[in-house]
Length: 377
Image (cartoon, rainbow, N blue to C red):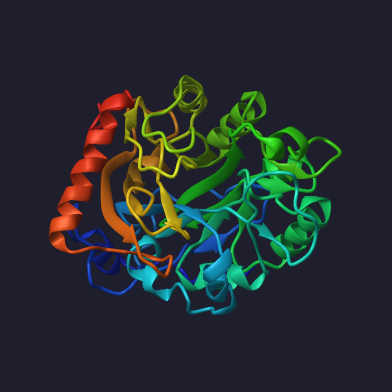
């Protein structure tokens, strides 16, 4: 894995935070995370409470951005071979201090299709394309991560070991699949998990166990809850990206809302996810920010409502996150939804102002059935 440059001074970060809810700033991309961990969390170092006069001041806030489902099937295949194919996303998803999406494809050119309707795969070069978009970490805990069976899984795990960005939610066993990727951004130590909650053949036959490889399963939630609780004790910020919900539904299932409550109680600060091909509601749940559906992102369907997409950018009170994990309120202080539409090339783009306003209104309305709050309590 490549080492990212150190976070620059607060003045540069302010460029990222500028802009209204429906617009994306035109400034250069933010600095990337200052350190990237392996799939196994290392003990974090203690941040000095009083930095020396010559030290670069730590920022008051940091930003995290999330996009939905990505694959490289059919006419999207050339994007996987071009490291600059997704460079247009650097100004949206890639502009935050830490950016994440769901990689919904096996990383293989071999193997046999498992019995299901749709199959997605891409060569390992697709990981370079994701890095070129400014994406810092992806989850592969989803119902397409093992579309090409054991051979495809072995190829995926080999690609994971040499990937330019961390991959979470899949592994040679449960220990690896449930291990977070770890980062330090603006002095904030972050643990990022991925898990699958979509009940299909992938979860039935290819969930990771103590002795077999596969995806991290969030049902039963026990293993994920314990991993989140352990990370909460060691890191300043805990993020969980789930594959959840029902296809083509705009409201969460009772299982999803139950999982969100369980993870919030365990110490998760951010719980987001995708799978339904629809933009679902988002907002605050206790001390956590939750998003039940980020929609498609780089995708082969370019007609509404399948084409509705966007980037969720969360502002985190970095000083509060660094100070204590025994909190009375959320350290996520603001949320911005940048509406996008997926074009005929499969890549999402910010639409004209009229469409952007319409799509942002639909995003806000989706909160109505989520049980989430529009602002932190």
